Image 1 (tube, rainbow, N blue to C red):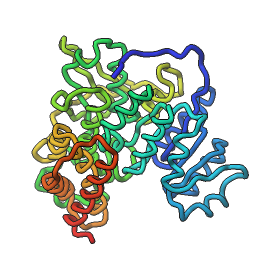
Image 2 (image 1 turned 90 degrees about the vertical axis):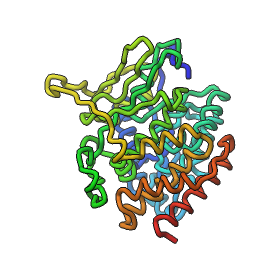
Image 3 (image 1 turned 180 degrees about the horizontal axis):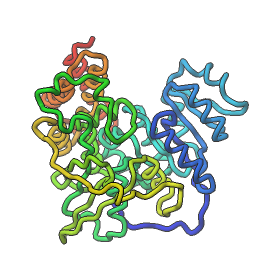
Image 4 (image 1 turned 60 degrees about the vertical axis):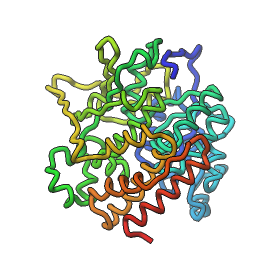
Length: 397
């Protein structure tokens, strides 16, 4: 990855297509765009099924292009939109929006696998890609990074951890050779100090009570199991060209240090900011510039201290499962991701215990015969097989 900065010769509005506009990342993105209206223009919005919020966002932003993934909601959405707004529908609609000729950058914040093909289409259309959906790089990191290099587009991380590493690496012309380790920080989730014997009694309501971040339900539960951090390890491997053996996780309950880079000379650089996703979103959309957007720096005197500790690897084995998937490569990361998605839904539905989430993932991974991941068809097929296997493990049809 090229870590050097390139400064724009003149400030102009960056035209953004936002896929996943009604989720937590999407809503934060629209806050950033509203604060930086002289720099950011939203030209397209897409959502899964929340037509009320999507219509309200269309009115607020004045966009003329929207897409709804759930085709059954098309008529109801049209009734709620201002005149002149074009509606695109289904997976094809997301692809069309991702390739809008006027766009400069496409921010993908779609939960699950639905964002993968639109992301690839955006790259092939020559648009820079801001990545908030973990599945894109976990499932198809080789495909995405190869396509980005071929088309000369930039992959800009939106996750706070990867955005932090991106910032720490800027200006280091030696690239990956200068790096000893990438250190991803983790809050530890709501069960950081819960005895291992009590994990089997954890309820979905308890797992949704994150101590520092306000996020969607899927990612919040992933944070509680530490699978979220495992997914981030695999993402980091592709974003920064660093082997899995050089990617570490450190628990940091205050969530102020968003990640760190340890260099071969023993120096460590860290990126710090308040727990607000507007920080990484803003930097991804305004890069390579830093601009004032109404966000406040941390008050270190008020914080008093910052804590760090090793993860409880034996009690939360998701990190080791992720490392196994990342080291094996091929289709195994896609299987890791797909099995987890099914298991999380089963847990939320009361069909699976909390530890059952990682037991399901481990079982499905163990039964999978790893294939090369150089084609999208291979990745999608592995994803499908993993979902079938995970559904069977969870007692589904």
